[in-house]
Image (cartoon, rainbow, N blue to C red; front, side):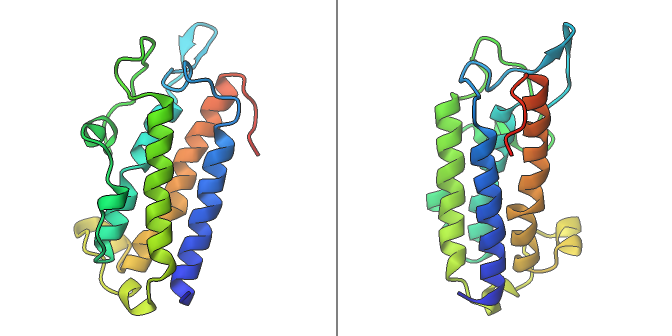
Length: 175
């Protein structure tokens, strides 16, 4: 394994391990619910939204590296539900978001596909310019920069939201 791919994959595996721990004690009927404290809704993204949102990026990682994204593609409708900027909605009837089982399965499959592919990427592919364009390429100029962000801090940010949600739901820490 090349040095850059080793760093990226190790960080990604640590973050996906944390994602697994964050699911401890979460019941399917809670997964897409907004927390309430004292009867007031807490504006905290629930796990359904966070795991669905995070599932969108592994296919992009494969595309950025010039690889086939098919193994990491999300089901139809995920982009509309989970893309950046879409509001996380409380789903008490379970009619807005797919089931916990589906979303978690898609999250696991998409991330495993990207991590497996990145294990064998040579540094020269990772040092190619980030094809995302605009501000993302300015901030993250190479594929390695983008992959490091998407499999590290990006996951951590959203898992931090899940951690907050857990506390509001009375589930306590997962670490």
